[in-house]
Image (cartoon, rainbow, N blue to C red):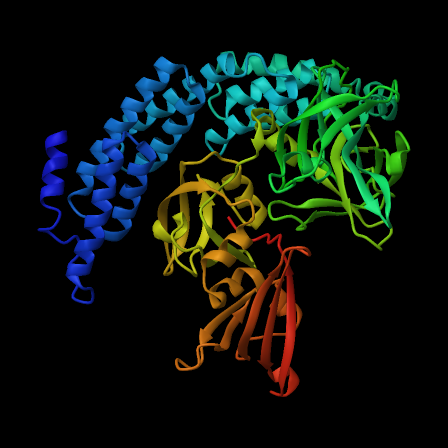
Length: 612
């Protein structure tokens, strides 16, 4: 095997990987030489994902007879890493590496080889459930089971869904047990023994669902008992020459009787923000005794979903019943429980005003009209049946009854990572997409990031990811951002009118992608994902003059009437750190204004919901 590698590298500068006359063979030779050099460095370092990245780049740049040797080396790297993980007992790594290797090589595997890898994958999932999830709390375990379910076929995993049904049966939660029972019945791999087991499970779920009304009785009281007050003491500040306590107030939800409490990140931000230089200490006060403060430690936090997990050295009962936020409907009645301006366990009610508002950079949120005030943040939002469907997190200043909540399914999707600790990490491929009618179209590629390096191009239409069809930004974000990185995904795209498959490796997603590209790319390029304008240079000698090729749907540009053919002169793009907004100053000649030159300032909040 090493001999094959030596031959490949020896031939590196002798044979060009492509020969079309339209391309400079010497430059191509340098490109494939650089890729193979990086591949060999990764192989020598036993870096499976580094070698996989080079392999993918080589396939897209210069596929030829040398690809087989690279694939054989990757197979050897994979098997060596798997042997190491078995010895070290790293069951999650066994799953992620096997899944990545399967996606990377499945189009070259025989049916028997693919079947063997799929069986290994299921075996490693079972192993991780039995060992890696053994000592976890139930909701923490549920979150990781939901993560493991992503490694199954599009029809889902029998083993993870069986475990989820059992878990929610043990929590006396008929809603979530019923949800995963329905999903379990959709999975493949049925046989006579499986059918009997499923019927038994189904009977237990049905019996629990018959008690749904009785279980829902007293839901508000149970949620109140599982709610706590959060106080962040930041010492003393000076206001008009007088020293006053500097405190942040919020609400928390006891989600684990071992002393784990869920709240909002923005409440405890000073405790984990390295740029904050003042005093900060987080306290938890229970509803039972408001005179006792428990010092809390921040375990993990997620600035994207505005969530944080706290730990106190005190056990409290957790009576929360987690619901399925995907079932919420506009106009549905909801109840919010919190501590507005310190008034303990205040209950307010309202309706769901909207669902899936693109308020965050990933996923949609719930808009409600229930009255919320400072101190409500982090509190439970429950539906009429008493199930937790959201975590209140924000309102808009100066606008009454316009408030928001993080869906409970978003919370569950990252809860396991909050237990791991520190800032929650996500993955991306490094591009921005636009929803146009029924198509997801790539409109921008981040330079030197996976999408750019793995053969994706502007104008490509994404049809599926990991064999799961996608039709919205939210769907594809859910698949990609929730996987760990590095990892390999497979994408079906329409490129040049033809359906093709692309292998793409995932990298860690920047906490703020829009700020990342602001610092990395040219202004005229980043106006596409930030403001929704695709520009072309109007005059090569005057580089700040452009013509609008098109505007993206639901973008800032389209909302102010900028359209195809308008002429723009870029004057300045700046970022306001305090306001968290981008400001674009332009001179515009538009048919809308009779081609009279007008100066405009466009603004865009930092949270941009188009990156994947």
